[in-house]
Image 1: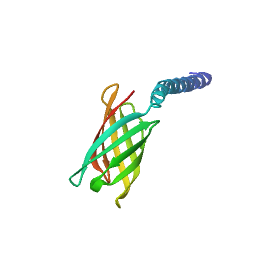
Image 2 (image 1 turned 180 degrees about the vertical axis):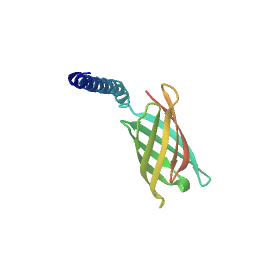
Image 3 (image 1 turned 120 degrees about the vertical axis):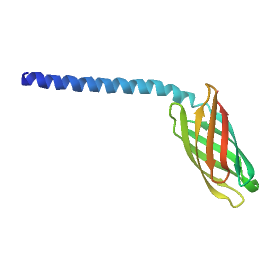
Image 4 (image 1 turned 90 degrees about the horizontal axis):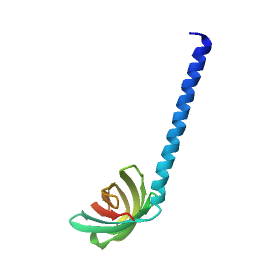
Length: 140
């Protein structure tokens, strides 16, 4: 094989790789943009849990991979949490930070939400003030 053929073969391989990467990125943007536009409409959900033998509950909504929950914890403490979601194809893990009354103070939370059907999602999480909880939400 001549030296020129070897160089041309390498350039053709690099060109193929570059075209493949460009096509893949284009398809990724095309399909993910539909998901992002669907996220503009808030997705409301309710949450029920347990901490120290007390029933806890919250209502929340998420849009654009951010969420807000307003909840009631043990000893009738009330508060809110701000959540950040990571949007993956089927599941959406999240972490959050909140503030609660009755000297409960700062709350840390984390969990995951899963698409059950096209219009319903389920979730499970933990909040340091409200304890372990289950979530049920709808998509419009």
